[in-house]
Length: 188
Ligand SMILES: CC(C)(COP(=O)(O)OP(=O)(O)OC[C@H]1O[C@@H](n2cnc3c(N)ncnc32)[C@H](O)[C@@H]1OP(=O)(O)O)[C@@H](O)C(=O)NCCC(=O)NCCS
Image (cartoon, rainbow, N blue to C red; front, side):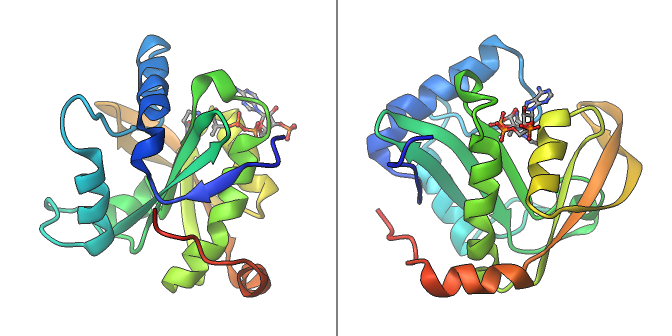
């Protein structure tokens, strides 16, 4: 894995490779994570709106977006939702992520979650809920490799139908030590 791998706040210098990632998901009909679409709106305005929590649409909660990047640009996105509402408790949880299709199965999914957990702790969370489709083997492994404990599987609404959904919790207390030695991410 590339030593220049960094978790950063979304930055305009990586927008073109981010847009390529959006197209890859469209081409392969990936629906398990929704990237933001810069053809439709200013995605950086959206990220700032969610970070501040101001004027959010109904049933949306404050959230922080991060990008995993390396020398050649965007690799993946991860979002921390600062709180859980009734819908997120069933499906969605505190953390969602997507790795660029062309970069799957290289360890980046496991890495992006590992790198963001100290940020979730810094936001003030002690544990995070992460959910995934029951048949999303890659995501289940990513969560379990980061200490996720399966609470249950429930039937939840998704994609206009219902789907068996795994609900995992990760205890963030072991991640405090990481936070103490790790520099905070600089806003770009
Ligand atoms: C799920 C996702 C983040 C995994 O990212 P990734 O970079 O491929 O993950 P990793 O390379 O760290 O793989 C973790 C493990 O899962 C396995 N894996 C990854 N994709 C897999 C797949 N489609 N089927 C089976 N196993 C898979 C890897 O081989 C690895 O196994 P190992 O620990 O035994 O070596 C990525 O596939 C993705 O972005 N999917 C679309 C969005 C999504 O589903 N997000 C999660 C929503 S809950």
